[in-house]
Amino acid sequence: MSQVATTSVRVHDYDVPLQTAGSGPPLLLLHGAGGAGMWLDLQARLAERFTVFAPVQPGFAGTPLPSWLRGADDVALHTLDLVRALDLDRPTVVGMSLGGWIATEMAVFRPRVVRSLVLVAPIGVRTQQPIPDLFIMEPLEAVPYLFSDFSKAMTLMPAALTPDVMVRAWEEQAAVARLAWHRPYNPSLLRRLHMIESPTLLVWGSEDRLVSPAHGEMLAREIPDARLEVIPAAGHAVAIEKPEELARKIVAFAAGERGEG
Image 1 (cartoon, helix red, strand yellow):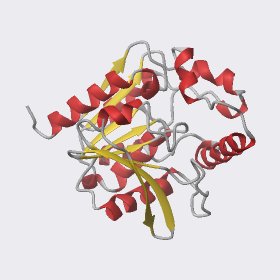
Image 2: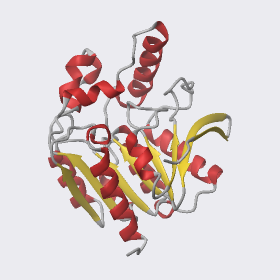
Image 3: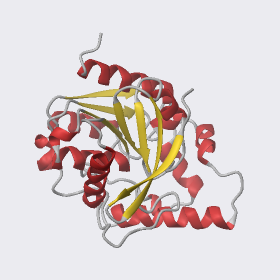
């Protein structure tokens, strides 16, 4: 298993915590609303084939929520500046849920920066059915919308609900609210999807109750050179429930786009 290096990268006036491990082509992994700053099984599996760069987005994992952050497009531009600061040469970009929204905006803004794009149950484009409002739910109420297997949700649960843990959770919820409380999508993004130039893989859990796999079918039609793959017996949190299957799909997709045998 690759050793994980934890560093901080200065992007303009903001310090970005970053975890890095592995060797091979660069892969930028953008977390969702949960799991920021954690090195999960998915990252470890991907680090067997890629050099994985896993940054913490502003407002998560104890980082400050800057005044300039008003929407996912701000985070996307910030992350593009991070790619430049790291001198990454056309990385594969993997975004999960909220991170998928950010990755989509990146691929629209700077199509040639992204070699290949993997969007795991992304939000960001308006869905036909409204997304359930997780902000008004107790944590256990939200679990069925995110997980097919309740026991897998426990991997993200803290060992104890200390004051520090509760404050951190509140801070991260504030960051998500800044981006997605008014609406969990960019009303302009749908008509911009045709600007994406990188081959795109969409991955969905078959039991996703937060964002239906039917939304993935629509995105696959709207994004040029995109395809959808569905992982059985997984909910919205595919990376937690089925890390091996997800990593295998990402590796095979990226290898095909690089022309590897």
